[in-house]
Amino acid sequence: QVQLVESGGGLVQPGGSLRLSCAASGFTFSLATMSWYRQAPGKERELVADIRNPSGRINYADAVKGRFTISRDNAKNTVYLQMNSLKPEDTAVYYCNAVRGGSFPYDYWGQGTQVTVSS
Image (cartoon, rainbow, N blue to C red; front, side, top):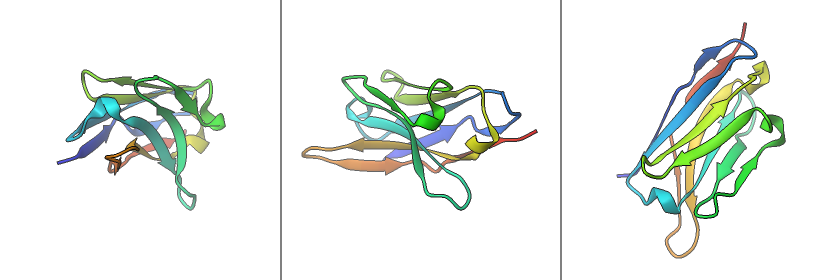
C-alpha cells in the first residue's frame, strides 16, 4: 500500500521558517523523482521544487529560489522542504508527490499539509 504522509505544516509569521517532511512507503523511494507542490485558495496547483534520483538534480520555482531547500534521505524514505523567509504569498496546502516514468510508471500524492504565513 502506497503512502505519502506530509507533516510539519502550521501557522508562522512572515519571515519565519518551517520544515516539511514527507514519509514514503509502499514503493521504491530511491527510484522516484520527489516533488513538493502547493495550491493556494482559488489557484492551480504549482510545482515548488523537485529532486531526482540518482542524479540528485534539483529544480525550484522562481518564487521560492534562495528561500526554500528540498532534500531527501533515501535511507529514511523521506523528502524534506526547508522553508525560510516565508511570505504571506507562500500560504497554501503543500503536497508531496512521487513520480517515475519508464516501464513501470507511477504518480503518487500525499494528502497535503497546510502552511499559513500570517501576522
